[in-house]
Amino acid sequence: MTKKKPTLFNLLRDTDVSGVSGTGKVAEGVIFSDGEAAIHWLGEWPTTTTHPKGIVSIKEVHGHHGATRIVLADDPAARLARIAEAHTVHEGGGGLTSGDCNECGWAWPCPTRIWSSTDRDPLATWDPTDDEPQPDTASDGDGDGDDHA
Image (cartoon, rainbow, N blue to C red; front, side, top):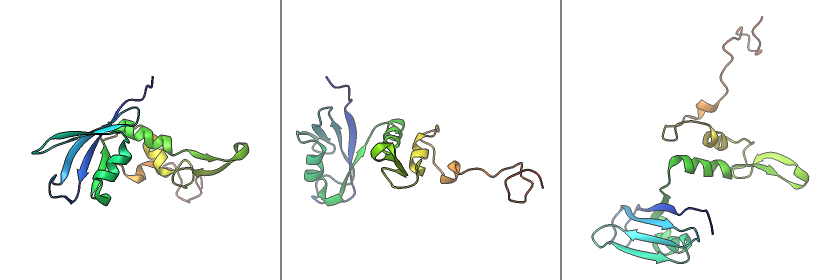
């Protein structure tokens, strides 16, 4: 028995290609622990459909070549944890590392890993300068990093 929980998502339609569903949030969905999925369409004709091939089927049938987006509806802390988990240091044979992030290629820890794993309010806005080293306030002003002339 799997411990993986179902994942909730919304279908957000930017362009109504069919002229039926409208735009904005047009459906709610769930990806079950075994990978199958279901969609519940909102609006004047609410309908629920199953997709045994999961999210791949939903993208193919309802994606309209990017006109409809699948947006996960989980809590922000869980989303940040998944992002942090994806951004790991590259390790090659014999435990050697390039020092780069597997996901984005930046030097590890990359800015995304730092952002997603730093303890902060997940709903707050993030300013990249929040994670920059702060200047030495005890410096004597000569730029050499010490506090004596």
